[in-house]
Structure formats: C-alpha cells, structure tokens
Image (spheres, rainbow, N blue to C red):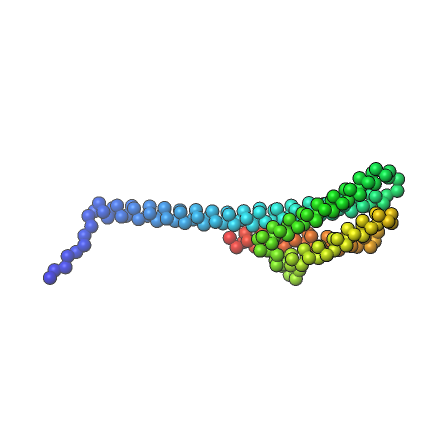
Length: 190
C-alpha cells in the first residue's frame, strides 16, 4: 500500500500565507477593541460616576455647612434688623438641610457601588464609620445652633458650638481622599 502525499497547489499555499496573518490581525483587533471598551467603561464608572459625583456632593455639602454656620453667626451679630435675622435663620436651616441631603446622596452613591468599607491607606476609618459619625454629630450641632437662636444666646463665636461643628464635619473631606486613592488604584489596575 502506498502512502499518498497531501499536496497543496501553489495558489492555496499563497492564499494561506496571506489569509492567516490577516485573520490573526482581525481577531487581535477585535480582542483589543473589546478590552479597551471594557477598560474605558470601568474608568468611566470609577472616575466619573463615583469619584467625581461624590466629591462634588461632598464639596457642596461642606460649603453648605459653612454657609449655615455663617448664617448662624450673622444672627448673633449686633445691629441686624428683625427681617435680616429672620432671613439668616431661614438661610441657616436651608443650608443645613442641603448639606445633610448632599451627604446622604454621596453616601448613597458610595453604597450603591459597594465602597462603604473603603479606608484611607494607613488609616482605620472607613467611609461607613465617617457617615455614621456625621449622622450622629451633625444633628447635635444643628440642635445647639437652633437652641442658641431660639434662646437668643447665640454669639458670633461660641466655643462649644464651634467644637461640635468641627466634629460634625471632620471626616467629610476624608471621604473624598479615600475615593481618590481608590480611583488611582483602579487606574493602576487597568
């Protein structure tokens, strides 16, 4: 029995020589395009939808906290007429409510993305513990401020109130720092 050799014509050999690299090029292009799209989607979600939105909410909440404090202090200033004091009281309440709402929105975004237990590098405070501290301390400050206005005992500088204010907002900036570290780690991971 004789073995028959499998022979390809020159045309088929040339076609394979050209078609194989083209096929590999097309496959690798499709693979890398898919990988690129998934990386861009991940970066977009990490950087924009989480970090940018949360940092914007945190910064605006911090501004609202200071505006609320400023309005409280203005009410205690001598020489303001009754109408201006009434407006400052409303501004204080409005800014305090906006600050609280924005912090809660930021925490909601963080929670939706499963990032509540993130901690700052070298730190032991998680975002969830910062949020819990704010939820506990901010109403105390607001209560002190409202009580001070109602009793007329508010002053431009009240040490107890300022200490409580500092305590209420001390962790807010850390949330942004934690998310920036997270986003930087995500970028490096890609």
